[in-house]
Length: 240
Image (cartoon, rainbow, N blue to C red):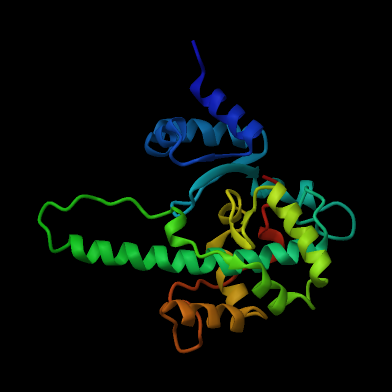
C-alpha cells in the first residue's frame, strides 16, 4: 500500500517546491488529519512545511527550533545553506520587497472586496485567494540597476546574483523583466518581516512603487496590513 504522506514529503524534498494546484498538495491542505501527519513527520526530521494561503507553492524548510543548530555555527549567523553571498541575500530582500509586498496588498484588497460583495448575497460561494501571475507585477532589470546598482555591487555583480537567484527558484527572468519564482513568497515570514522592510531603508522605494500602482497607504507611508516585530536576518528561509 502506498504511503501518500511519505510520497508527498519525498516529492517536496526532491523537487524543492510543489504548486498548490498539485493534487496531493490540495488534498493535504484540506485534509486536517493528513496535514497533521505531514507536520508530525517533518518535525521528527527537524523540518517544517513552508506554506502560506497567499503563496502559489509549498516547500520544506528548517524547523524554527533547529535553526540555531543549522545556521548558528561560528561567529556569524548564516541566513542560508545555499552559500549565497551577502550581496545576493541583499538582492533577494530587495526583490522580495518589490514583488511580494505589493502582491500581498493586492491579494488582501481583492479578498476584502470579494468578501464585501459576497455579504450582499444570501448564498455566496467562498472564492479562492488569487495567487497567480495576474497579481504580480514584474520588475524591470534596468530600473533595478538604476535604483540599487551602487548599493548591490554594480551591473556585473547584480546580473551574476540574479542568475544565482534564478537557478535557486527565487525568481524567473524573461525579456529583461524579473518575475516572482516559486520560492520567493516562501523565503521570508511575511507577518514578521513586512514592517521591518517598510520601516527601513527600502521604505521610500516601496512607497513610490505602491503609489504608482494605486495601493492604499497609511499616514506614515506604510501598507495598511503592516505588522511589527520582524527580523529579516533570522527569517530568511533560503534553505528550501
